[in-house]
Image (cartoon, rainbow, N blue to C red; front, side, top):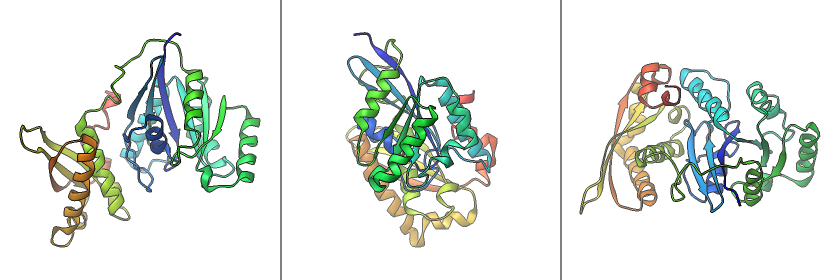
Length: 301
């Protein structure tokens, strides 16, 4: 049997379940997942290898109307992922978009689905919907003949995930594998450590604060006979946000440090000492130089 290998871009509006889907497909928790939109900020690559195929998934930020420079950079990540992909997987959240109009009529999505590349549409969160709404949506989308496959799924319950893998495999081009079979991503450990810390910030702070934060790993040292040492800076935009992150008598940042350290140790499978600091970088989300230093320009260099 000839080997199949290729890139699969996962695309959709914010909070439709893109990261949950990729984690389910891989059987690994690579992409951070929260109940807040715009959690994913960079293209996260996950690799699923079998004897005769290799699927390279690109988990992308959510499609949105940008209101500041960082969000425009996120759209660049999506555009580059679509260009790189051999197969496009589009996700609709049936709860937020029961007739598919919000997704399919989106101007940016329309440009994507006009691509001649194979396209698979996934209708997510069907475990929280009903058969009548689902049946109507499937019939409506199939009648448009835009997508090569339409598959109802529940990413959180891992329902129909095998069907998604099989559909992708049907459309993957023949060719050699790009990565060794035991490799599951192309990002270093420090990238995932920063993502884990950012995930815990999204889960534990309210309103605008999580969206105004970035996490930078200042030091990551593996030490013999001692815990690994990790020093991370939590970047905020305004002086008023710094005491919110720190909390009264430092309680909030201690809590974040504890739960982030536990999650990092679970991910790395070894003990770490985690040091967190808070720094103010005014208006960093609109600062081209700072965004580049945080890695938001690396795919356009």
